Amino acid sequence: MTEHDLQHKPNATPQMTHSSSEEMTSAYQAKDPFWTPQRIIHLQGTVGNQAVQRLMQQQPGGMISRAPVGRIQRKGIGLDQSTVINEFVADGCQYWEKKGNKDKPVEEYIAYLMKQVNQALEAIGVTVPCKYDFTGSDGTHFFMKRDWLVRIDLAYVTRDMDTATVGALTEDRAASLASTIYHEARHAEQTFRVARMLAGEGKDVQTIVAELGVYEPAAAEAKKNPLANSPETDQEFAQAKAWRNILTGDYEQYRIEVSVYDTFVSDTLELMRGATEETITTTWTKITDFMDYHFVSTDRFFKQEEKRLEGMQGDPTANILLQDAHIINIQNDQLAVAWAEVKDKPSLASVQMLMEPFSTLSSLLFRAYEHFPNEKDAFRVGGKVEEAFKQPTTK
Image (cartoon, rainbow, N blue to C red):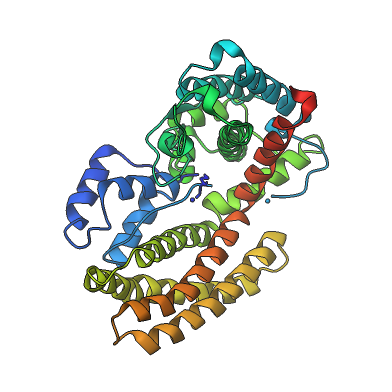
């Protein structure tokens, strides 16, 4: 997520139905063109329906972008096992290098990787295969846990390629694709294990679905294999606990706010980069809307969150999130100062003055996103795939 993330990320939360998406679109699209159906659905897939509803009630508009290092492990578990990684990489390399595959469309390489990673998931006990489609946008790839779906932006994958074939994929791009698929599959494993943890607490399928926002068949399968803490499962359980706290626990709202704010900031920055004399009026209106609504509410949240996290420093995750929240607050203050200087001076020069604080804030927010326990883990595990793909011994 990849997508990433939001790559990411930006990885998903509570349930959504098509009817709720349509209702939200019609109710809010008139207020701000940034609330397009595509962006609403994207947000719902990455942070959840309930989160989007709260945001829309608080703020009149917004934008989307991005998909996409957990706890340190004593040994690999699940998709993090070296034998599982090496087998997946060897299969992917073999497919990419085979002469008979060179003229096939890139979609078939992705389909093959998805088949192999689903086999790997099944082998480690994740018995619901991931679906996939190619409807991602803005270079975003992500896992939607409510639909058990990996979403790929095919146009981004094939950018700058003369032909969208397997043979046109460079080693770097073929390796990156394999890493992305594995990263998103790791999110499926994470979600499934958290569902097993909830099952281990005695929760029924519908409660797991409601609490985790997960695909019901996955919740039903997790219920068959509950995860409880024991000497044999202590590391597996500890990982699941950290993931649970960011997906649906103590740090869920922090995750949502970072992901959404990152989206709004990066998209506003992109808008500023494209500003011209002809578009300055429209651009300035949207920057003003961002500062009047998104900035004000989010700045308030992070200042409150920093105080809350200060009281939770016994948790290693809280320590990391606290550092990020503190730095984000410092940069928010700097952005507020820069805005105060130019807010009544709409011009390209003023836009240029705002670009530096916006750019720094965007980088800090994405770094905070990478520090989420589930994202840190998925980037680390996916990184192992990319590294192994480029090793001569895997060829």
